[in-house]
Image 1 (cartoon, rainbow, N blue to C red):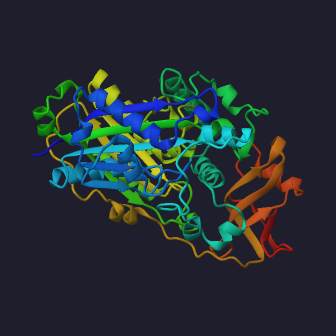
Image 2: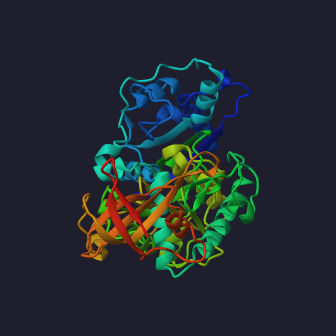
Image 3: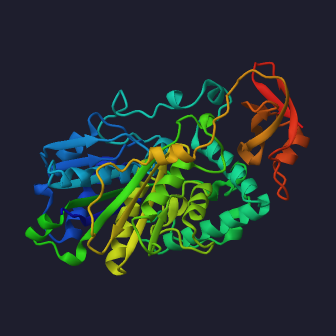
Length: 492
């Protein structure tokens, strides 16, 4: 049996005194890779035959994987740039491990890096960065127009910050909680992420944050989309890089890697929801998330010793915690979360892989890495262990059929309707100085069809009902009309 092990992990955080001194994403990846080699205790970079690069957003290049190999002075047989998604580092890690098991690769390097903080500061200062020119066409573009219906795009609900609150507000109603109770749970959970980030040297925000600070709306912590203030959303304005080196256990022993540094890949699972969030069966659960977490739970006889539950927005780890049957006071991270550690776009779970590897070296046991991407869409989980596994990872880790078996009927989505309709889920969007931009409601018509409408900010009565912290408005009936621009509007 071929066991795959992580033998080296490396990270870097770059906080230059001036933007012009900042490292570009390729330099961040290369530095992380060299740190991973040092971490392994063995000269490995020249032996790597597969370089896997996580989708990069802040500064796109022509042929990113090839350029990284040039920075590192490598000429591997395989150099691949991957499609994005918050779960993608786990997918890339898992696939690289399976190629090693199948004999297609011997030693693989997985890298990712983002430099959005430097880029934004340079733009604000009017500084031209002396980096390799950007590509004219983005490799592996993130095509929102292919993922979201014209109605969703017309209403401007086409970015994660506005979509995840739809799940947050639906879950609290399904769990029998008041909005105030759900917000308190989110704040307590996020405070635990912050506590771990405060002692992680690679974290962007290294300070403990009390739940009251997370929920208190201030100019520094404004509301973004109800009920989330800034301190409950991912922070991509960071400069961070991460890397991991993996190989077969036998190869590692032959090369002289210390067995105490080897962390085993036990297995994992993945599943995907329909891409358009309007095509989901509901918003209070994710069959794909449930199927993935149940599948990886079956790989571990006892509760996991260490966890990393993806944390772009509170609804995701809250849903995962319940599926896994974990207590409310669980420590959900070994890294610090995408708000406090930092959310370098698609790379966070590679940093989490580094943190989990170090944790398992220090405290023997099994660790769960759970990531998700897009809009509660793509789910991937991997189990790592300090113990040698008794079985090798399955070649087919997809569990979509299990998700389909528990998925409910998807309602017909319509974009033209007038009459009575009830709230299925909702959010309220905010602009500067916490000014309400508009409310957004997903509705069910009297015959069970689904549509979307806005609530104008001038409708203070309906907005007040949406933002009532004492009781959820889900299920409330109102009237749908058509606005002057052709978009649907809804009011109590």
